[in-house]
Length: 554
Image 1 (cartoon, one colour):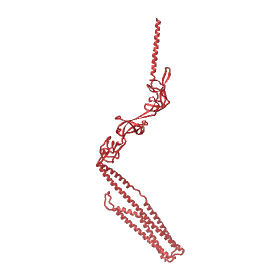
Image 2 (cartoon, rainbow, N blue to C red):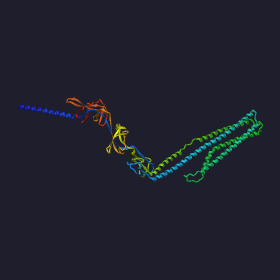
Image 3 (cartoon, rainbow, N blue to C red):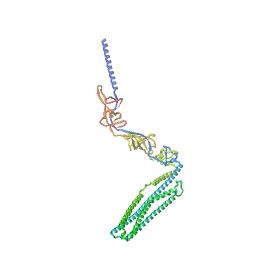
Image 4 (cartoon, rainbow, N blue to C red):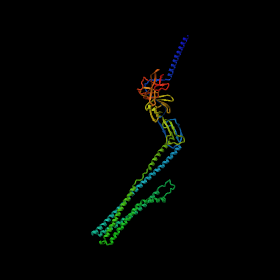
């Protein structure tokens, strides 16, 4: 009996032991399975990568019209507001007519003053030109007169020198002719006297000419009308003015008189010499050759040579001095464009007056040049107009366009000519196959516009633009969630492979480096060869998974 009881206990204990072992085994496997990541896998598949560009923007005008008017006019009233639609010819703002009349009157008066200034400038230029021409003519006349006289004196001195040398030679040869000598001396004396009297007459004529020129200049100055800007408008010239005019003309004639008086002095000296020689010849009896000594003939040659040298120097001086006077008179003077510049200013004033008078004819009303919408108004009642734009109008006749801001990344997938879809924000209406007209980038962002057909969307309407760019077909595409980056920022994926363990066949994650050809927000295209279509790529997990991690496909 005791033996049976003991045997039963053994069997109970053995059963309890084996039951505990089974429980512990189940608990152990459950704990092991709980520590393994549950992953979702997907095989690579062929496909394309789509890039979607979505922009929000508004419709804007294709063309703006700038409305301007003359600056400095007072504004009487403004009839429009920004955003208001206006018709062609509709009044935008009105100018103060009374102020406009004052501006027209002021403009006319300024033009009259400008015209007088131009006339004065032309008159001064003509007088200056005439004075230069007179100075040149007078300088040439003085040159010709002085050089001619000096040349005549030089020629006569040459003849006298030749005569003196011939007389000396005749003396040495013993062939002197008293009668011929007396005739030559008499003729030389008479010629010298005539030259002296001619020189005196030249001085008297110059003095008389100077006196007449002074009187003529004084008469012309006295005949000029008085300057209306001067307070003293009494007729006649002041002593200071008479003195100034007289001194100017005397300064002009001073070189001429000095030269003429020099010629008188030279002619007097030559005449005195000729008379002395004639008197000496006559006093010595004239017919007795022995009374004219060799020394006297030598002295006569010396005096003739000195007179010849002096005449030559006078001729050279006359050519140099009066030649310099001609060159000085011909020197170019500073060119003045005062009259031409004044005429340009006058023409500008005339054009402005035409514009002011046109505004007066329009009763000061500034009207819209086209049908449009006021995008900006820069005028205010009571203020004055400026030389810039007064009102900006969106020209409705030129249509409108969609405009939106695009990023640098988005600009890679869209370009001019691509057909896009627009959806109106207010009505939800969709417009398809609208071409992109412009795309301009500035650093990180840019502006994209889409031309809209007439009547599509109103100006200022909000809209959303949508465009999708599809890539070429790829044979290996995976979800973007399957793509990872290692510590070197190199892309890789994790594939699931079976491995043998003491617990049997289990699944393990393995790292595979890949090359990304293209990707978008959801999908990546990989280069062929790294993974194949039979492999299962991990695209999701309930916890972190790395190379070598035990996994369980959920």
